[in-house]
Image (cartoon, rainbow, N blue to C red; front, top):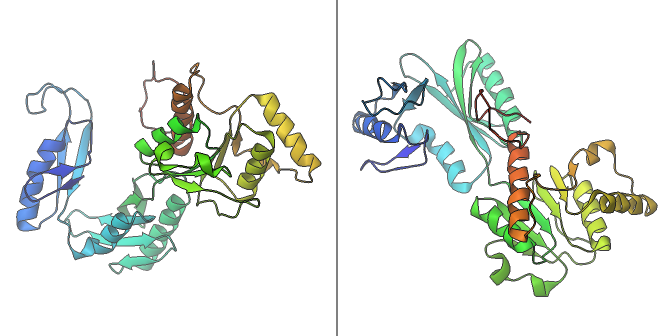
Length: 318
């Protein structure tokens, strides 16, 4: 959560319970430059008499942005992959480093064991599909790891009419989308807005983005087979194939006959049919079904219903 000098703020720490109070406390930090860790008890009896009743408690570290965070802010502005690691101490004299995508640590000088431990955890985080901010015990101290990652990449093979609502939903929630189709007449701004439009030519002359999610939906067997093979060989993190299972099985058999047999590791990244089982029928409903599955996979969830859940809502359950 970023609080400006005039008290305005962007992003959130909760569902709306804390933000105004945190913004108020941040004004003191902005004024004197001294970081503070503020504790909030969210039980119904004590939260400012508002009867919020969220339950539990939370500690919020509030600190003024200065030159120590400059490298971190550069990665945020660039939408780059990096981890900001803050060593939490009782006297608020926090050490901080930024771990960049190539593994370099920039910032305060750390003890060797602390340096190595932070590097290992940060690199592990950056290797995941969805780096989550965490606090870990490293070399005897608590370290808060804050993750910055670029928007997830979605590559849609096929620019048919049902790709239009899928691309719109993905763009709406902040994904970086590419639409791949050899039919240039379908690749238009009017249909796909801010998506990157790719005519791959005969030989698929383009490169998949890092950790790309791919959806194969050309509605053409030969193009679907080519797209599936390209995604498998290109190291896509996830491949969804639209259509019934029998059609997918026929595609795999045709690929084998062409001399390409996917490995078991490659096939583990493929899902067919694609989408959550919500009874979707129209293209718009299918788009919601597919994007829901992609969100669940990226964040490590199974994609079921929440009804009756007694544990933490945001704990991964993949």
